[in-house]
View 1: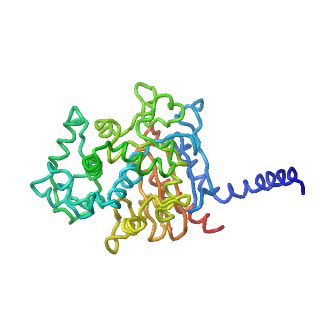
View 2: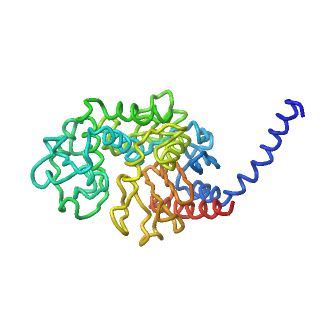
View 3: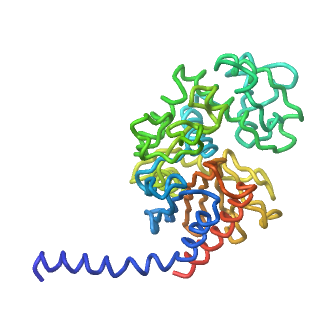
Length: 379
């Protein structure tokens, strides 16, 4: 067979394979598409993959409710990750500093932030920040209580645990705000520089970034609007805005393709494209539950077996699965037992047309998780 005929045959076979691939995740696609038709979010991308690559990628809707607006794409549209920033940006920067001995998991926060002490604060450790057992309040509107980044940081340092540190798990943005401050204090460099140097550049996660420039507006999913005009390239989380757009809990923007690479990094134990980018022993430690029934790992969340009916993770993921969600409508989960990951990015916060849109989105996520597991298992 001549090289030309071989090339034609390869193209034909690839074309014939596409309908089968699409059919395999037809139910998953229909569930994500229903979120657009129901008015939960105007646009979305879905990526499903295994340790060695993406096996399914699809896009849905538009970047706004106007059908004349751009169509999102898995590899070029930037989405405001919201709280996925915690595990995609801040957490790997912490991992790096742990690996080189600049941080210790069970060291008190006050060792790195001397101003954070007194009234129980001296008992809070890095581990407690990562697994959300610090005892800190779940949320504080820094953007209304302060006028500058410095005054917001000062207010953050004044927060005392409302429960004994280490006794109760309660998810809190304040934990990762503190981690961001620790990273900056230890390295003398900005959180943005640390994240870019330790994970974004080495893992080839471009164009993942904080504060995308205005020229990327046509490629960025807006998460809000002002007087009818979509707000692009601006982080939705107003506390992150008070921190200048770069904070430990929110601020990153990313494409679906970049997040898929990040999921592969974790499925491969910290290795990507043959390079060890995260310390494998620390990866295992971060994914080891503190005890039976624990719903939090270090950074990551685990599906709660007692609350599967109201969960973004459905009913079928294994006990090894972990992931994270974001307020703007983002989700990543990884199931090592199945060698499977999912990335769902939406802009649910952009003028949803249904009441209680975050609850409606949770239903989409749960149904989607179960559909993906069923369709992946049926291969």
